[in-house]
Image (tube, rainbow, N blue to C red; front, side):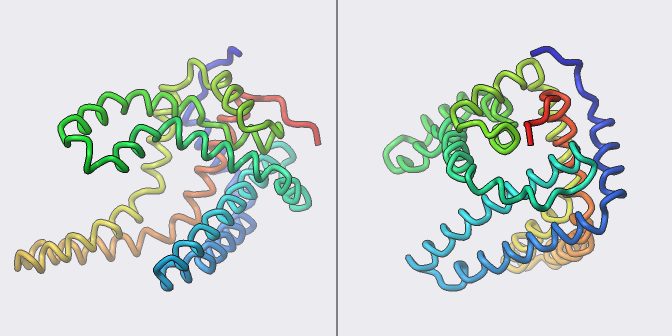
Length: 257
């Protein structure tokens, strides 16, 4: 299926324009998803043990549903000019297909790394490193080949295996474009979480080495991260809508309502 190369600039411009048009709804929707995520994941982290792992598994399954709702809302904003809350219920019959597709993608893209991790005490480190490096470009190719699997399940009501094939078809010839797109989108949302995540190890390293400069740098990173975190309520909707823009560029026919 041949299409013109999409413009990352146009995708970002659309994401920003859409955010401005639906800012209140998108912020409230994102905050709601965040609060639900916190409510279902925090108990599992606090409980610990087998019960905690079970609670975290249930939380992960619910989080998949939240992700599906976000995609459904984003597609409707693009297709209909605004969110169609009543259509969110259509994702429930698609849940098992969505879950199966996510499992398949994980096994195809990261299956080799899962095996390396499980067999880390059996496979010599040098061989593991070589296999890791050899498989990495293939993993990247498969990751971009299946870039829109989730969207196709929700948009076309495709089965998991069909969605893999359809995503491969619509991304054929666009993997480098998708790579640059994903790089730009990561740069948009990563600074706050990255600075905050890096601050902890830096503070600990400074304390262990008794280096005031390293510890101070870690503290500075923590506050930079905290300052940047609120921008996620803007950048995440922009990223989602920019991705939908690209998806519709490659797959312009909306699913029948």
